[in-house]
Image 1 (cartoon, rainbow over the protein chains, first blue to last red):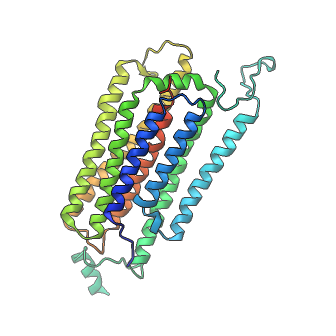
Image 2 (cartoon, rainbow over the protein chains, first blue to last red):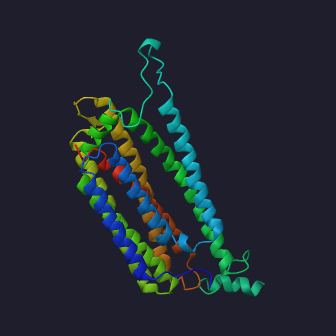
Image 3 (cartoon, each protein chain N blue to C red):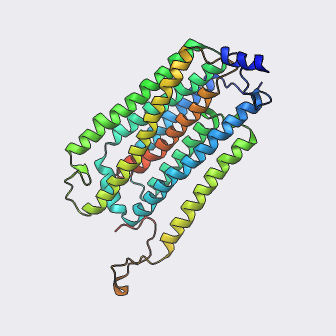
Length: 113
Length: 225
């Protein structure tokens, strides 16, 4: 036995869950929640990703070596996002063509301009 | 040794373990590991685009919402459903391969190709052509004249590059599936030997995951306007 064979019923359950989550994220987008719209959308997207990766991509039954690679991919993505976004959110945004007198404020998430 | 090699050549579907592996488990794990390492590089590839998107979305929030409002969220939602459907048929194709059902494998591979083709048709023929007519393509035909027009153009650049690269991955997938379908038709897969199908499944589901993030980030951002 070299691999686990998942039941087809499970695949259909995952499929319908993904469809329901798609409908949910689509309809919630029309409700104005301010900056929480994006948070809700991302939570739903991450949930869908976990469903696809766990069952469709067989991570539920994968070797720990394979899971380590998945963890590494997500971890390195997190490094890239965290450091880049941290930089932009905490530093004053100086453009080369701006004089120091007209320098804009550090950008904060959700501030419209 | 020579005899077993000849056997490998003559009955490809019967002799299923390549020389360098001890058993099927090891062979299967090696293939999975290699495919996932490739997918990890893809995560970094798309991750750079997502990082750039995040930075500029926060710099020009209003313009990005205005740009997103130009897109048709209904078509985006429908295409999401189509792609999820193709992921289901791909998962069922892998199941058919694991249980050694050749005709069912071919049917599900063909269904996946049709659903993937439908997604690409909607994306190019219904969306992009429409976008061109509406003057939404920066540099080619751009007629948006509202406030922050240059930043709306930047959002649309992200839209075309991200969905374009995603579509390119799908076109590559359609090509690989054509080859897999021919191999399945020739009877090159069996209950013991179907790593190709399973590894391609990982790739196809990965494309699905990318779209799962693209849909809310691009189409739903400005929906509540």
